[in-house]
Image (cartoon, rainbow, N blue to C red; front, top):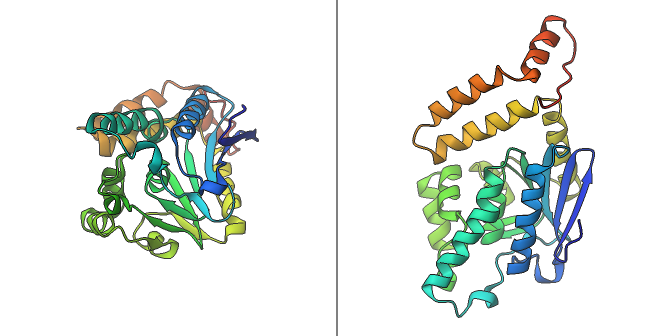
Length: 259
C-alpha cells in the first residue's frame, strides 16, 4: 500500500506501520490520520495479518503530537467533530481491533502520539522515550481518548497529575506506573515487539481476538463478564479449539488455522 505519510509493510504475518513525517516529529495531521484509518481497517480485514507494530520514523519521536496549525481557528463544533472522527476511525478502531497492536515508542510520545500508543494493546518504549499529554498548555484537553485511557492504565490520581501539569515522564517512570509494558534499548525496540507477536502467532487467532474483545469489554461495557462468557462459549465452536485439545492430548504442538 502506498501512502504519503506512512510506510506500510507486511512481512511474516506482521504489518509494520511507520509514521513517516520525521521532519515534523511525526505529528498527526489530517492526512496522516486518514491514512492511519485506512491501514487500520486494512489490518482488520486481512486474514494474513496476525499482528501490527506501529512506530515513528527516525530516533527522536514516535509521534510528538497533533498538527496544531490545522485546528488553531476551529469552532467548538469543529473541534468536537475532529475528536469524534479521529476516535471512531483510528483510536477506537485500533483498541477494538481483533488483531493485537503493539506501539514501539521510539522517542517523544506526546499528546495525540501518547493517545495513539495508549490505543494499542501493548506498549514498548525505548530508553530515550518521553511521554506526556501537554494539551492544557494550549488551553485544551486530550481529545483522542487520553483522559480515559490514561486513567485506565495508571489510575485516577496519576492521570490527573500528568494531564493538568502537562509534565512529561521518562520511559522508566512510564514502565513503573504501568503506562508501558517494557523499556528497551532503541536498537532492540522492534525486535522486542516482534518477539511478543511471534509468541502470539503461535496461539489460536480466534481465541486471541476473543481475549482482546473481552479485556476491552471490562473497561468499555456495562457487563464485561457477560462478554467474556459469550466469547468463551464461541471458542468451543471453532476448529482451533478442537485442534488445541487434540494436540494437548497427543502431546504435540498445535497448528492453528484461525477457523
